[in-house]
Amino acid sequence: MTTQAKNSRLFHINVTRQCQLACSHCYIDQDIRDNDQSMSVDKMQEIADVIGDTNADVHIIGGEPTLVGIDTHKQYLSILSKLPSSKIMIVTALQNARAVKVAKLYQNIATSYDPNARIEVNNDKWLERCKELRGCGNNVHLCVSLSQSVIDYGVSKALDEVYGFGFRSVHLAAMVPTMNALAETPDPMITSQAMIESAEWALEKRRVGEDGIFVSPFDGLLQGMSNYDGLRCPAGESCVNVEPNGKIHACVAKGGEVKDIVINQMQSTETQLSSNAYILEVAQHNRSRTECFGCEFWITCKGGCRVLANTDIAKNSVECAGFKTFLNYVKGKVHV
Image 1 (cartoon, helix red, strand yellow):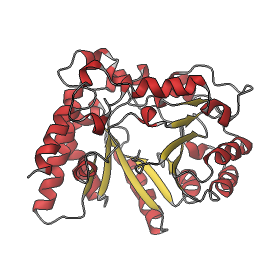
Image 2 (tube, helix red, strand yellow):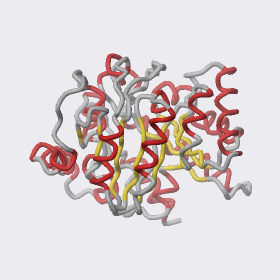
Image 3 (cartoon, rainbow, N blue to C red):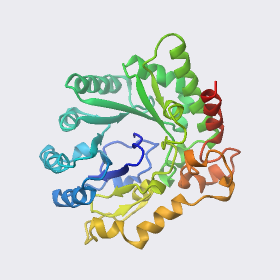
Image 4 (cartoon, helix red, strand yellow):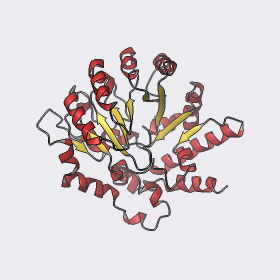
């Protein structure tokens, strides 16, 4: 949902994979979302012990993490709040009042907007929940997935709507093209053009005096193309995705496609992170592909999402998984 700070490590802690929604752009298989297993407090303590004083972004996600009871979240936070150098965030669809009660426990909250996923009444309720949380002093961050349906709806139109809702900062996320989400995964060139459209939207807002706008990835890249990591594959940056049972992947997509997530005896978090399997997974995602050799944008995108690059969608596209057309556009704006 958000981009980690440079030299920090990203921990996605899936406290549950259960979710009451069935969004067409979701990378998680439905059978996994139907599983009600949740992460134990002891497992959260084990993860926190590994994080220690690491400069880490810790995202409490799912599934829908607020389906885990509020008392359990209080215990999670009593552990996570002791991490001296970590930023803690919960990622929630804010579908109901229960979600708000849980989300209020967290200072930083990320939610998503999909104009096709909710009827107008539900959107109104979602917006009321966002406003309630902001009124309580919580930081509410917004993400929009660049699914095919959102692009068909209109990127500028969606940005106009979130602007009307009072949001001045939004992150546009490229799709994670697992089997469950392939139908909603656009050609990379279409994604590049959508990102360019979002940039033009932001620039037009500034032209008329709206200087408080921040649209990522465009504005993140403007601040420093070599430092911004929002287009890189998190797996190549040693991201840690922890399943409710404690199993670890570097790639977020793997957790969405694994079929067996029943409780079983797992190796410790520390043991898994030092295992050959995890180290090899990171190395595979960080390896340069042939088409990336000599590319001026390698340090910025590191080849982008390897899962996307390996799909027929990307292989048959004139655009690369690192969205070079978009990066060339940004480069032109940096030098204006």
